[in-house]
Length: 206
Ligand SMILES: [Zn+2]
Image (tube, rainbow, N blue to C red; front, side, top):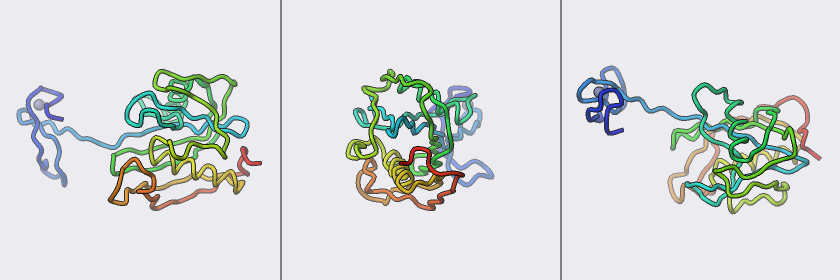
């Protein structure tokens, strides 16, 4: 942030008094501009044993597949945001069934909150940010064409849970291993993975 959002004067990077890290501070009115992580919310939508994925019409990762997800808006709860993103990107109305994954991405200042959801009606279509929306069986997921590493790990957890007939909430931290493409899941690990058992067998299980 180069200019103060309060008075428009230039900012400078410095450590404010009593703080422990550099911030953008206004050179005229001393306003400190804090930048904090953002919440991304989305749904893993199940329908008749398949998952709904969207092919992105926007950068980054244009043309790659993801579950419907996006930034939480002011005034929304996490669940409301997840349902809205599913409506916007896949034109699908869903009911949230359970929390599924809460993954921190500290290297890019994002926190993902993903929910298991089911379609309230059978219709779906590509929203303005999607090129294409379709259902994938768990044996045909497009592993080589996923948009982001977080999508890869979330779908991997999901498939493992269905196969093991268990329902878990996955807490964890996605860490880049320090080399290689930041778009390649092979260059990441999920640290501090804490799978929390939820009641009952996985409803989508065989
Ligand atoms: Zn200012």
